[in-house]
Length: 139
Image: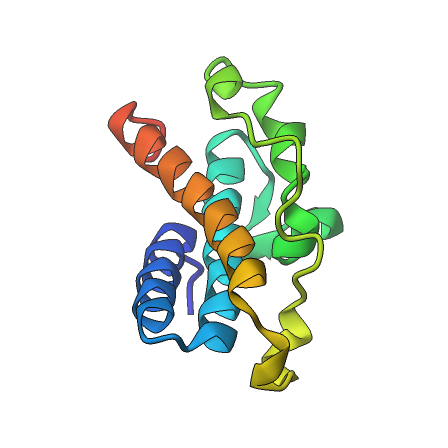
């Protein structure tokens, strides 16, 4: 299947919000991380991230990280782009304690404070995606 970071971002965000509203915190938290990761990768593509269509992934290994490792990578690409200054991320990394393998963790490990922090990070990415769509950066 061909990667579609924008569609995946939107889908994971919508599902995370549904689960959050149902107090299904563990899966909501996981999907907030995936939504942020996919949204950031879509922005990175718009800012010039090298992508290999043969194997359907970013060319650079460091760009193949999940939410906990990709947050800082946006900076690498936005600094070299004319529209980049308008797409800054907060100085804190809200996903530093998020891991893709948390999908194996027990539900009691997820509380509202943790999930709200990840939700806020994913929402920031959502806002950047909406801005990029309005400004024609995502075509």
